[in-house]
Length: 347
Picture 1 (cartoon, rainbow, N blue to C red):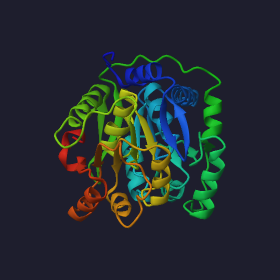
Picture 2: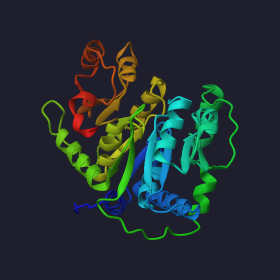
Picture 3: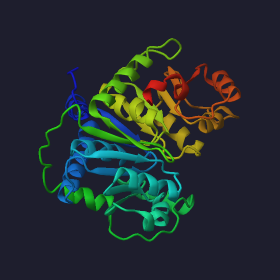
Picture 4: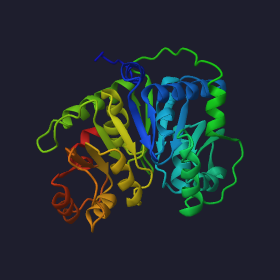
């Protein structure tokens, strides 16, 4: 594997080396590494055409949907700084983060758009929002995904926003031109990470994030975690880009090694998780404590093939001994608390 000097090298190398492999799966639909790369380049071009310059900040506020990966890599490949925001942040928290980061454009999943609506009067730098839908980039399944989320689960609350574009229209427009070349260096800032209320944020360079990716690989060799997954491995997770450990361990590291990621949009929905596991039995899991607990109870895992499962991780707080014990009894696999056991991934 070639030595990467920036995250753009990680992106381009993965796109070339694993072009025909499946990179992401969501709602039963799949995108190859090359397809993700094409959409990412369209996003990079679109942001450049909006007038953004190298080093400008772009925010994303979304749970796990297919459009997240192209946004992640498109922002970075375009020379911009990514500012991930918790999709459940309050309007006050959102405004604080956007103003502190200086974000000019924001990608927001429509399930969180009402939060942006409530925060908009307090925003100082935001110029435009790109509205993402759960069904973006998943073909004909997108219609059913949108109906399920909007009408059946009623997860989209009313909102009114101006200066917005639908994600699909934006990427189609961006694809009309190739992105302009950008001179990337290891010391360029790639990520703005929120440090907490009253603390602002931390700007992380490509060099620092590459070190964290390397650490993720080392962590997977720790006793009790399991062997490093092969490039045919599948990782299922419900952790958004805004989770700092998930960003490294899932979104970036798994792309780096050519593994498939199964995206679970809603950590509260065991039905979606079961459907995903039956379609693509996972080798690894990175789930919230709540979802582990729900799956380990009753007969939820009946009929699910977990024979390939080698490692499980909890990337967020709240894991209890009871949940871990019930999961181990149901699957035979321990849950590793990465949130507390790999602090370096967050520091």
